[in-house]
Figure 1 (cartoon, helix red, strand yellow):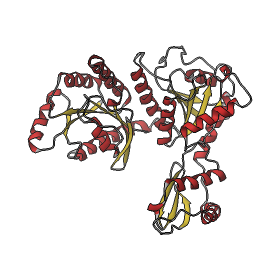
Figure 2 (figure 1 turned 90 degrees about the vertical axis):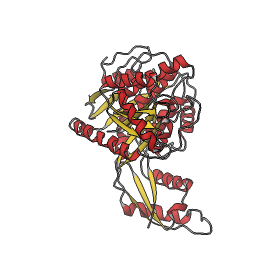
Figure 3 (figure 1 turned 120 degrees about the horizontal axis):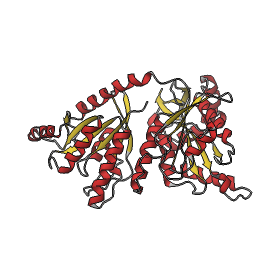
Figure 4 (figure 1 turned 120 degrees about the vertical axis):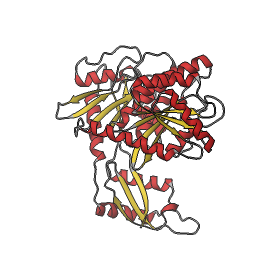
Length: 437
């Protein structure tokens, strides 16, 4: 199960810098102006071998002051709803503001695990000042400097320890059945399609965006299938703030995607493949989950001879270079191709567990590599001697060669495409690793 950590706090306390340090990226745009973090709010981090997701809630905010405070308050509430641990970031230089007190108040009442990170503690005098933040009434306090990394080790040790407790509670409930999750923008028709699958009005479907309350697990056991169908339909609060909705659906999607094996990404045929759809597709890829794209409301589209083909090409263009996944055109209303959608999802789940023998791999790939070797770099020739599938949960292949560092992405894509041509990994992410032999 994915652990999710949300970073909350006022603008300019260094949330993005902390986010970058945890996820070892430079993706959040860090800038001195208040409220400039945009879009790069989600990343994976790993500490002591434990992987978790980090969400920087500063990523969605409007700039006028009154809405601004309100927005951030909402984000804190969303974070409380969705995350396992909240990291509350404060700034030792500015001290405690009214706003910090208001957030601390919400967090104290939430009953969630909260860790206070006092940022910008980059000299000894400031360590003493940091303890002043105990007056916020939250127990775990960590003075750190997210710029130079001081203090982050202790903070991460404690963070990872807090997941351990959670894992034991969850293990009892999990059964070994495929989990198929339906994700997508609000109003693409997710609940309707779940009802069409299960054949009963169990989710209340109304045309208001954000009416479904929470992830609903349904055991689907008929027509020879047995799996969990997870409906994460949309959002939880009926807020009309568009940024907020966007942030919300991304948060929900992250949680849903992490807990699934195969994701049915549902898009609305009448609206095409939009930015938000692309974002969710990207999240599915990043988490290496199976992907099936469902184009819903297909009954409303006027057809010409190759409408379907054009639409498919358009979608694959948006997700390139990853294009090897099934697209099913459905209608929840007329129940058109509903079962096809489920069958495809099960097939993708099975593809994920494809194991290829080492001899088959080498017999097929080595001659291809010989005919089209990796381009030489700086006059050095790269020789790939041997390939094997790794014993991982997602299909991954290791190519043993003399100079792994010189093999670039285009060549890895070539190898991946050749593997896909021969074996069925439709809907599944493949990882290609180059190893020193």
